Figure 1 (cartoon, helix red, strand yellow):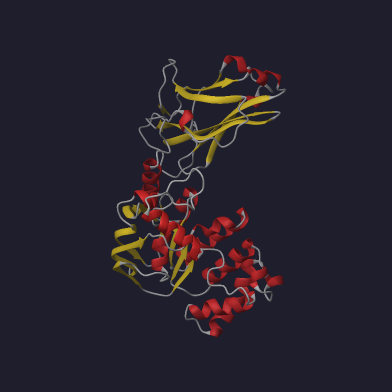
Figure 2: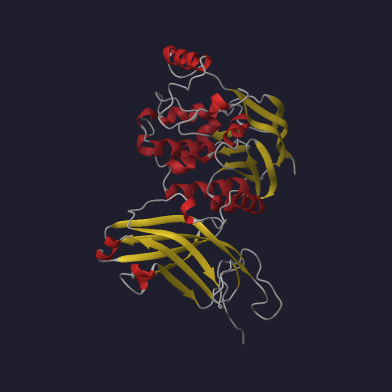
Amino acid sequence: MPIAIKAENLSKFYQTGQIGAGTLQSDFRRWYAKIRGKEDPLLRIGETSNRMKDKTDVVWSLKDINFEIEQGDAVGIIGRNGAGKSTLLKILSRITAPTTGRITGYGRIASLLEVGTGFHPELTGRDNIYLNGAILGMRKREITRRFNEIVDFAGVERYIDTPVKRYSSGMHIRLAFAVAAHLESEILIVDEVLAVGDAAFQKKCLGKMGEVSKGEGRTVLFVSHNMAAVKKLCNSGMLLDAGAMKFYGPAGIVIEKYLLSQNVFSALRIEQVQRKQWNNKLRFTDVIFKGGNGNSKTGFLVGEYVEIEVRFISKEEICSCKTLRIDVGINDIYGNRVTWLSTAIYTDKICPEKGFVLFKIDRILLSQGTYNVNIFCESNEGIEDWVENVAAFNIFFENFYKTGKQVPERQGVLITDFKIF
């Protein structure tokens, strides 16, 4: 396949400093504090300044990146915040230039990096469609041919002749994506900006990007923290960490390496995990997985007996609550809910004096893989505790059907115990 994008020894650094606080007075105060060895006077209480501690004022956002992307490929770019994803997209979109190295793109690039990118607020939606098309190098008649499709996809027909400064952020992103996806560019670059839209529009956008890549043979680069969306849309992936490329290959493998590198499945003590929300009358302390012999373990065969013991401490006033339930949510590595266990199925109120709840699964029929656990407690007075990704267990497939044959990958989450006659 022809190469659509090629990066060679690509690097980008930024110079940190004291200028840019917003006013000349603020810049002077910050500079004067630094030469006296004092803390930055503009920091909020409790903040620390890495600038005062770093030995150098140079921050490398990207460092020696090399890759080739084939025409028609859909590539997911993933990594933690600050990994260099947005910097890479800005270089690819020619918004900023690399410090060293070079990047070659073969074809017109349409990018969507933030809400309102490329829009003039005083112009109408109609005018901005033609403006964006002209920036991409398209002729007016080409834009006119796709105009109705763009407006229909964005759902802003009623406001198409209204200045975009009066659009909501959702309307901005719908029109911006519709323009980027429908105009005839060879390369489409989309950042996490789609998270601004509602769920229905996000699904519509993912479908359109799949159509653009697989149906029209255009190259798509997609940055997202939604691993399920990356896996569904992209066939290749790029893992960035601290400005360096850690891995480039099949999307599924890249996602797994990223999740494992972030310790998503580490069995942390619950006290080390940041709480979502709690009232503090009941607080989780541990999650333990057990087998049939009562011993703790984190690996099970398909069809094996599994116990999930959720331990907690509680205050005396929890006993006055009319209802009290504990839920266990089991998710796959992409964050998709696989199944749900809840005491509410059997009782309105658990016994808090016991200090634990034991869920028993006679036969666990999940396909091979790693699964992580969320735990949740709610009383009639509100959420008492809520912890996500607190523990994980593995399921292994070992001749479950007694035929020596394995279940192919991507054939569902559940294993069905069936027979044929």
